[in-house]
Length: 292
Length: 289
Image 1 (cartoon, one colour):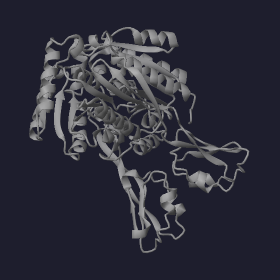
Image 2 (cartoon, chains in turn brown, cyan; image 1 turned 90 degrees about the horizontal axis):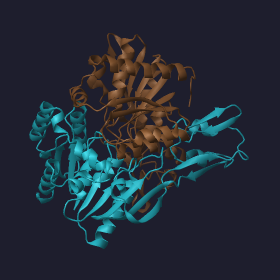
Image 3 (cartoon, each protein chain N blue to C red; image 1 turned 135 degrees about the vertical axis):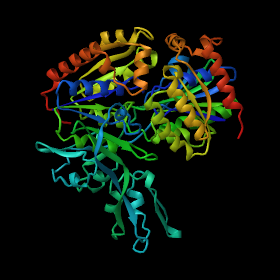
Image 4 (cartoon, rainbow over the protein chains, first blue to last red; image 1 turned 180 degrees about the horizontal axis):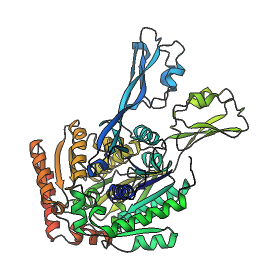
């Protein structure tokens, strides 16, 4: 199988627009495709499909529970915790876990010499699966509101793919920090979606540099071409980064998207162009069986 | 007074609107808290740059002259970051969470923690005040600590210069950096757009914002891309007791201004959009609890 991540440094450039349309075209051309919404903070890909819910998995993290009757307030767990998630006042015999800061690393349990620490799972979010025409083909990572980091939920969703498809399309979260890296690190190829504005350009550079560092092949789709200027195209030419496709800015496209409609359904030439792009990627990068 | 501009969904126009707010009449401290993709400085060419190193997380590293291949660490790591590759134990820098446990339990003391010193905080002056921004090095965990550092600097500059208005350009999403951008602010301005995703994300970020008990405003940007969706968002805001500070139509002039390195209110102050933004700003800063 091949995993293709759709990413961008800047938010709102059209990641979900591209991911949902690619997925749709692949299905129409009888590929065993799967769409994985990895933007766990704000997942939206499902809005474009009439999919049936088929399964739900809680994603949890272990957090410590300290038995204060056994605890002798030695403070070793507090010392071991690198996230400042254990608050202790030994003189007053007060010890508390701050769940929001805990990463579930288990260091405190290892530290405790008196077996005063047990662990309990807390929910971070869910991975839900959906089917279209009776085939399981969409996964959504959804972080609970108030949780600090979406990374665990994203990882769980990617694990869930489990070779169940020939082509998996990962709709990545924006940015270039941890959530982005966790998504693209598992992909064989990354499509970066940008727009020809100074902000788009600046964020694209940062994404490209990040992908270079982890040796991920990538290509770029310029969305909303015609707005802004040519700096992005010039940059791609200079850096020898493949320009996969340019999509002209049209108010109608934005309007369709806003109503949860797929452009590839109504614009066959767009559908064909996008299919060609993806076919080329599959041919070139499909057999690398890339593992991180 | 600290005003946070946030959105949930990316690309709705946080930065363009923050930039426009920052270039109206009064002087401001402009704070770019989107440390993952800082952009605002591109428009303002700040001078007298101060640069501070931000040390984020640490990553575990094996000293192979000491490692005896006992593999004890593999069992302890809960982030699946340590594995066997051929004849040695390797730690994935990407997966390592920096919890230090492997380093603590290694009987040979072969694992040390290495700090990442590539993230930075910058500050300087621009035509209409001061600007502070952060740059998180790629792949780092965005814990919100750099956001806090940026905001502390902004507050310090506010004291030093007597400029009272701090505009915070927030990151997208609803996670830690957003929480850090909102904590302790006076007003939250949520920029949304009339799409299904825009409304979904508005609803999700509202749940978060509500926890902070701030003055809340919504701006519906690019409102004419889907008028009926804009009405739906307006109705939702009304039902939920949020003031819609204004609607902005899609305007190519905003992009034209950006390309020229200016905000819309700088380059086209008398345009329809420029005037509308001015009106929205006055509504936001004037309203008292």
